[in-house]
Image (cartoon, rainbow, N blue to C red; front, side, top):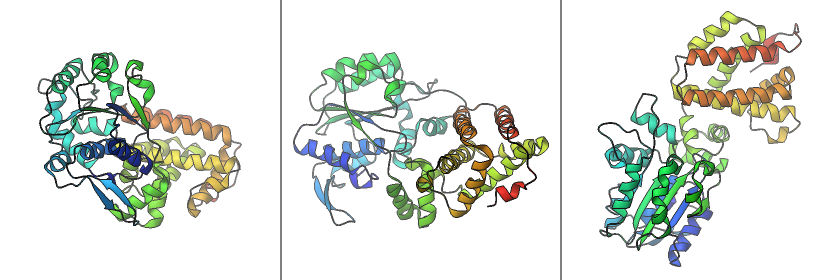
Length: 392
C-alpha cells in the first residue's frame, strides 16, 4: 500500500516519513486509534515505504509533493501483495485442528488486509467462521513470533512484524517483552490497536505510541465520491453517519438513509400507539435482515437520535440532518424529551453490541420494543395524529 492510498492522516504520514529520512525510526511503534481510522492501512504503507529501494517524491492531486514508495522495486511489489519474506503478521484468529498459527490463516488475511484494511475485529472473525467463536492470539503464536524474528533478514532493509489488535494478546504478551525491549538489529515492530485500556501495561510501557484521530467527515465524503461514485449530498450524509469510520461509511452505501428513516417511523409509530401486534410484526420483518444490515440500522438510530438530542438541547447549528430528517427530529424531541432520548441512545448502543455477539434476535428485539413502549407510555396521550408529529 502507498501512503497516498491512506485516507487523510497527513500529519502522521509526514511524521513517519521524517523519521525514516532522519534515521530515527523507533523499533516498537503502537498505532493507536478508533475503528476505521486507517491505522492498519498506515502500518501497511509504512512497511512498504521503509523497505522501498527507490523512495520518491510524488506529486499529489492538490499539486503538493510528498515522499512515497516507488511501487516498482522487488520489495514494493512483494510487500504490496503481502508476500515479502521479511514482512510478518500476527492477528486474532480462530484455533482449530487445521489452524494453530496465524500463518495457517494467511490466504484469508491477505484478502482481508488488501480489500478491507479499515475493517474491525468482528468483520475479520465473521469472515472466518459463521459460528460464535472468539478469536485470540495464543502463546504458541507468540513463540512463533520469537522464532521468526530471531532469523536474519532475507532481503529487506528491515524485518517487520505487524501485530494487529494486541488487545487479544492478554498475558501471553509478556513473552514478547524482551523482544520489544531489545529487538534484533533492523527489526521493526508495529502494533495496531483500537483500545489502549485492553492492552497489558507491560507492553504499553515498551512502545512509542502514535495516536490516530477519527477521520474528518470531509475526507470520508471525498473518498466516497471519488472511489465509490456516491453523489455529494449522499456522501456528506453517509460520512456524518459513519462518525469518522471509513469502513462503516462504505458499508452504509447500500443502506440508504431514507429507507432507515422509514424503518424507524414504522417501528416507532406502533410503539407510540401501544399497538403490540404491529410491533412484533415489525420485529419479525427486521429479523429477516442480515446482521450487517441490522447493525447499520442501529447505527443510523444512534446518529439520528443524537441529532434529535442536539436539537432538543438548543444546539441546532451542530446538527447534520436533511430537511426531512430535521422535521421528524423536531417533532420527536417534543414527544420524548432529553432524559428519554439519552436512555434510547444507550439502548441502541447496546443493540449493536448484542448483534455483534450473535444474541438471540427475537429475544433482543422483544426486549428493545418493550423498553420503547415504556418510554412512550410516560408521555401524556394526545389526540394529535402521530403522522403530524413525524412528517417525513
